Length: 149
Length: 427
Image 1 (cartoon, rainbow over the protein chains, first blue to last red):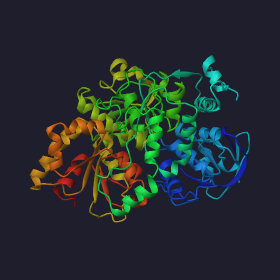
Image 2: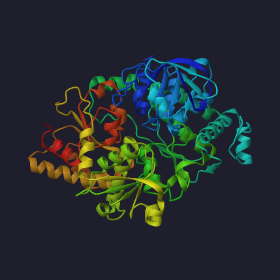
Image 3: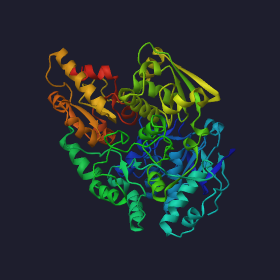
Image 4: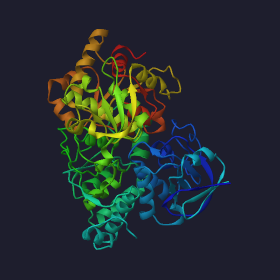
């Protein structure tokens, strides 16, 4: 087990299985099926992301460096949370980018109910992404500590 | 909530609920968003107009429309009129029966409803739908130094770089919220420090580099950093209409292939003209772009078509929307290409996209009729929204837009290659 310290962007405690993207998450391309075509598992539709393409994102601890792509990114995350099709949490190795930050804050401020929750931790460091692998168990604690088992 | 940011008495009052719960939440959103980036205050938005990225009435964006309804119900309209990104559907653009069915019955069923919401919230004109809102014909052109609450990555990077305005790469919804309270968090590209270049890009090509290719190379290299370009002025000359068009397409590629929000071009863009290399941070990295580097980047693009040898079924030009100068130049190029190949009409269904106001002005010139004779369709559509579904995604579509390539299955070709494809047979 290894432990990483990050910064709490949106609070919350949880345990989930890891899903790892070493490249940036193109939010619009990735969540297209979840939002437009009723895919409750949020299967990643970004063909340019070999780590995530075709994999279920809903309910997973999504580990990534940052998000990239369209400035619709924040509202796409907001919609995914509202529909209960979001990852269990977002864990960023880098400081959060403005689009993911918008999605995290919008969801936390404007949505209510357990099913819309999406804790977010950033600044976990490059070592975090080097270490974590798909399927590992992730514990997110309330103070920005992330345990990888 | 506990606030680290220094708010004015008015901002604090809004946060405390003096103007209702909805506006308090708008202020909370902006404060929390800004504090994540170390903002210690809010800056007044000074531009005449805002620009929003969300222009499409996708059924799937129900939660966004609900939020908009809350703003409308509380009278929380935008303090500025705004333009928005292009409409997603245009019957003039070639599409199959099935595509039409999906567009109308599954995807964009909320278009009229959403456009009505936008009108209530402050849309500047019923046809103010374009990603190139800063063009003269559209009229949403910020002044140098203006603070903006825009989104749409290609518009933000143009406003920052070519116009010298100040704007962060805001997300949809955040864009509108800045306009509703009239303030945005002060951080990043709003600050002098945030506008310093951390990369020097030396352009050492033997001919004028393809704008979309150069932008892609730089975007993928520097990601969200600020590059200072040396050597491009040799190819651009002065900041005339042609150079502005070039920088429009270049910037869109930097913003979509990476996450660039601002670039400086030595001798060309306003801050670089005035401050020169004082804009470059001390420890800036260097990236050299020569012919071989551009070729390497071009060769790295994956072809997403199932049948990689398929004959193209559609060509899109204009992501971001084309300028008047570009439409005129391309009319002449297509005409010449058709003359050279002995054809009267383009060989592949081809769509040029532009802002409604640009189309109107273009069609009032003789060039409008000339382009029509070549068979090219002129449309206000957003090619991205056309492509963003499995049906269109399976079509072999070609484009000279590196933004469209990045977000969809469209295949990228240079301008010269596109011209050959559409005028000489598409093989």
